[in-house]
Image (cartoon, rainbow, N blue to C red):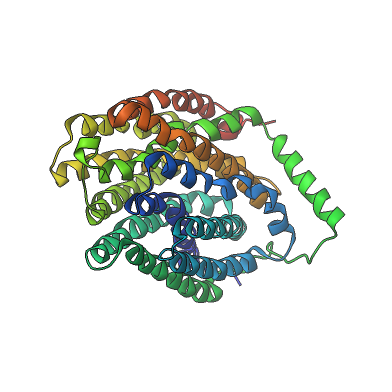
Length: 420
């Protein structure tokens, strides 16, 4: 039975966003508050991207075995358990090892959920609806960021004034686990059953390998394949490094070059002001693409996304004390990023068109995750070598490849529709 997109697209992408944000963004705040150094924070939290990088390895299995709807429900149940185990791990003596292990499990479940959820989206909506709802899915994904980086971080900050930080963050992850129990019940009732989303049973090993080989070969034969991979890897090269150091920069003391915010203030500045601006940027990006097309807006979106990185250079140089100034600066950068990232999302949707949309979209997002993982791993070392001001200047230099690949993508057959 098909359902109106408004009844399930928003909640599905809210559920998709929460574990990703907890694993790759909120984890940096958790580790910083529990005393881990910047280089280690960037290294270990970047490794947590790996499940999203390699998820194309099992995306054909998700496509060939069972239905995408079944996979969504199974992984949402698994995410509830995994996040609950993070809450259990945090107050223990081996908290770092156990927490990273449980976050790794969470990441694998989340990556699998992404494959299935994107499959439900691509199969449950026609091409016109996909274009119309690209802004909606991006918006509710970003609402997940608001909830995780705003109220949940602020809750942790509030609890930190009353209990040990490890217990405060354990409570936060317990709340997230409960949220996935609710998501499972909700989506069991609301997710559509597309006629194309048909369970095929368990294939033989040979059949699975043959199917995987066919899916990967078809992806490699897409027009302008090499350029598309370069775009996915380099469009966010600067952001991949910047995102790892924003929370440490906001939390570090002033004599270390930071802004000396409390955990609750980071939740307000980054997780509320910043993410609301990100949300607004995503909505505006979806509107202009729907009206004028990706070809017209891709290169301007790249400029609007990257130029506001200048605000972090200004913050590191001036080290203002006003929370309003800091919040406005972070919001300005996030507004531009939200606007520009919508182009990236639509490029992925258009790249994945064809008979294997679920797996091809998963391959595309895997390449995207690789582009975030590798630069992020060294971001902490670069920051420790250059200081915050030097690091943010380096981030500006790292935007240049993004402009180059955006200029190519705007004229590519993937965007122009001129593929043979």
